[in-house]
Image (cartoon, rainbow, N blue to C red; front, side, top):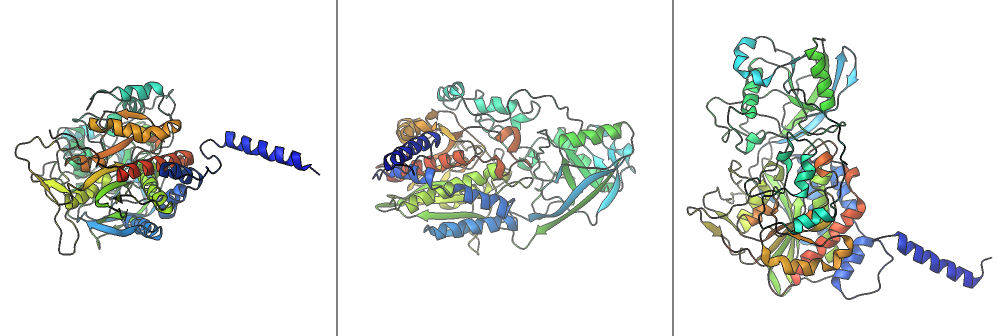
Length: 596
């Protein structure tokens, strides 16, 4: 039997050891009246963030804009926030967006000259096959589009490879990284609206030197389009002489030739990671690229079923075909288009304020995702931390002075459409864009998707532009967005709002020990804070550790729950909740940038 004094000493040592080993999740803090300390204790020790992100990604699955799966996730998020006591929880429709798309069944394998399964994914909004096919595999070089007339009669019923061989070189840099002091110092010393390369740009450039630039989100004002591995012509991309133009003509030719299936190589990734997004569009006679229908539009032209292969598998097929080895593939592809509801939905809920309740602080991320994975890092994590931040404030029974409103957007991957629609309806828009008008059903019409810079911020320096604002414009305080992957917060981008530097420094001070203290004058682009920033409202995005966001998960089949680090998710939730609460409690609203 252990003596009482030894038992006490043992318990004391165990407690001390547990404190040392537990890192952030220390034993419950002493009772405090400091709301920031309460948020920290609750968020690090009794977090629900992993439960939230697990439901969004694994219980619900991918959430393509316009799909029933997205709406199901939006309804779940609304109901959860209502359950926690948030008020005015609702789905706010906007649109019409277009057709929803759901993958029902898919498999692909090579059966000759020998059998092996393929790592592959259909492109979103691709049509399905009428029945499973077994067909010969051939190659058509899109660079040979001037000779298409001489190639007629060769592709009917064939599976056609249309990408060139993509050489894979050994990578000697780590796939997963955190910012170090040098990286952070570079960001802290960046000039306002700097166009210099950021540490994140350097990380991305190492993933694939030929195509990495399309993914970089840290950017100069002239490089705000981020979107990835899909058809940039959906945003009014390059003209007919470009690779995209040749691809569009090739697809139109293969459509006429009655090819059975078109196969692309993943433009990024290796090791089985593939990056897939929207189906490519064939060229329409007389149509400019800016006016081409998008894959989700109800007037999108007929197109051949399309899939994307992991580069290793694609290269293997390519070499076999080039060596004139007969190759056959077996493919089954079944999809469903949703034409019943052409609207899309943002999800909102709020904690009403007290003496300044007419003023609003917002936080959020985008609920929509691509379909190859489950959209965990892009951007279920942003949605989950926003919901968790609101839950922390509510469960602690804190009473903000300003109203705190959660916004979970849709249509982000198609050009920030959901957040732009929300901002246009509630706060304002420029007269040279298609304003978002209420329809008879109370839904919203979509802003123009073919803006020359859909993901960039509007500068407002065009003399022909006029900002039309609502009565809530002046009452708006700030919007805080999380959509830079799942890495822990390291600070915040000022987005050109230098007046907020001392305030943000004060608000981040309690979290220096959690690694969040860098304040950068740089802009960051490519996500929903730009919808607010575009009309002069304070919109901010956080600096986050890159982890493997651009090297492995962003828009890929590897974007799954396993890429979320629970400790990082808790840290993000806590700091986000504290920043939002600080903004809601301050005597003055967040400062706005001077008008340009």
